[in-house]
Length: 205
Image (cartoon, rainbow, N blue to C red; front, side):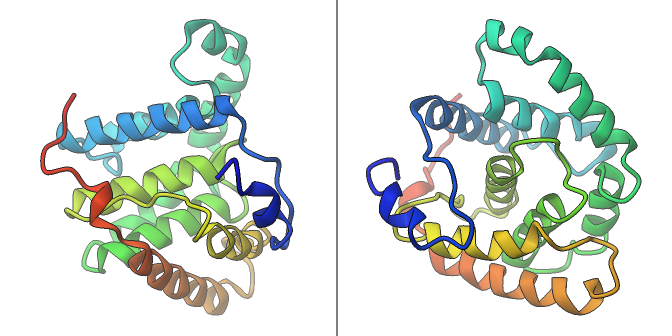
């Protein structure tokens, strides 16, 4: 991704900052966290387990380094307040949406979770793309499917629809027509990206 990002950026509707080593390191730590959550059979969509979603977001922003956590302390606290208190886009909205989708395919649930996280108002104050990718992977892994992994081959298909999602209001007048179509297309995208090479027979801790 880092080596190909100039080419990728030229094809994006909204150019993005290239991922530096810190971002890559934090994302790898995030994937390890998701592995542990799945291994421990943790339900992050139960009210008692939603703190794990905040930890995913904190991990992609500042990793596991205690000094970085201290530096980001005020931001982490502000994110937690927004996460619990935002009426239209906080954790309550996500849990309500997810509760009614348990019979849908993992691809549709993973895509829908990503759309709910990224659309306005977003679930987190920062890092919604990265956190959303990890939470999608959690949904897929819980169903025995490979996680979503961003690559040079799928980056444009991942980022360009998300530029539209970020401008979409969760409870706006067009939501009933727009978001379901986006969910369906994103579910197809996730299914097409499924790669068993990213799925280990046994998760190590």
